[in-house]
Length: 581
Image (tube, rainbow, N blue to C red):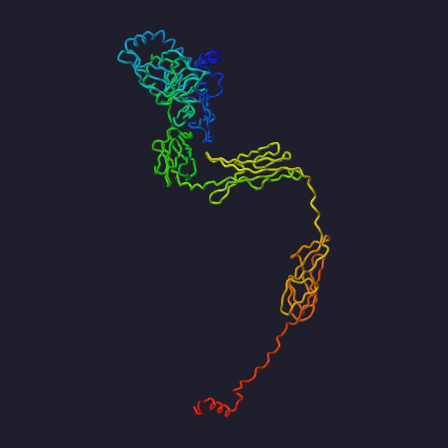
């Protein structure tokens, strides 16, 4: 029975005191989550970033989720070197007993031999400073400064001056939350110095969020430290050391200088590879750094850049500047760890082709909008260049109407409102230059009329060139082209060339194809043309080809008709003196 009553008393009065909290200052009874998740602070809110947020702002880091903690079996016995810190009732009683028996001895010992250190906890800047004694015996010499996480605004680390009782342990187990810490040293009651949090008593199970939260308020009242800092206090700070918990003057540079960094394991440049730039252009580079424990940071501030050809490109604060045509390789590094290089190809820009003018189409002066048919007219604005090329800039120019009561314009679409005239203008800006084009619009109210019904021809006739009669005479072997015309009821004629079928009733006399007739033999024939339900005819007379009359015979040569004797006599007559030649 006595044992039952003792257990009840322990539950009612003793359990509120624990290694993480002081029942008066740091009560966890209403905190359903583990210590490391309680990081809200008005001064420095925690930014929780997952791997999928790589494109977010600089220095945002992945924070480990509390669900990753393994549930511990509270009923399993702890190893001998791990002390449970969620119930310090016996220790508190022991302190009270010792105070009456040994307190005076400790005070006397302190007076005889001053303690080497005095500790200050600055809850404003989240910095622990260990002071040593100067030559005058004052605690003014800074021996060590450490980044820390104190209690949040909801569960603050109490301000004041406290004397450390000297209670400490290698590992501590916080049963209420199932987590561990190394090198704990008691400040007062449930307020401790201890390391960052671990899932198990194993240094490979670090709670990354408790590590990354160093430098901001994150605990339930205890003072979290890096393992090496908690270890230093564990081995170097004796019982009786004074601890001052104060609100210091804000010094963000001090906090930043002490904030630890995880070891990077991979660096990636997240941009197109190769990167194509023109001389004078710039391009921003995103860098993703993966640290130990899977923590990811985007564009950290301690990246250094290496450029293989500094004549071609340079990099500053993650921005590439293209300097000259050529090729360069760029790498990002943190310490000795580097990314794979990306290639940057820089080219000279193409020579600029000058703009000659801005032009609006369709052209006209004025352009008429018949409001009886439509109220709208689409205009197009285009640039004309020196090389005769054109570029439509309809959606890029500034459109305006001189008389919006008559017509308005938007993206080149003119809408007529009433009859009248308006000047529609387009303005294109390039740098300091402006190009303007105008067109006059005239809107009229004219009732829409029905289009006339198409006329139907009454007949089809055949016309021959150079012939007004009803018969065409041609010679055998000659050709002539005929023409078909449609005749309408109003007497108008329309020449037609398609949809016609040509034929003849006498293929021995003529040959006809596509309106061309050729005479074959003397005689007469009828040429027929058909168009839809209409038929036309024309008479062709083929005459025989005229032959030339025979030429008269020429007389024989008179010399050939003379007798030889006569010829001889004439020769003698022609000889002088009648002498034979």
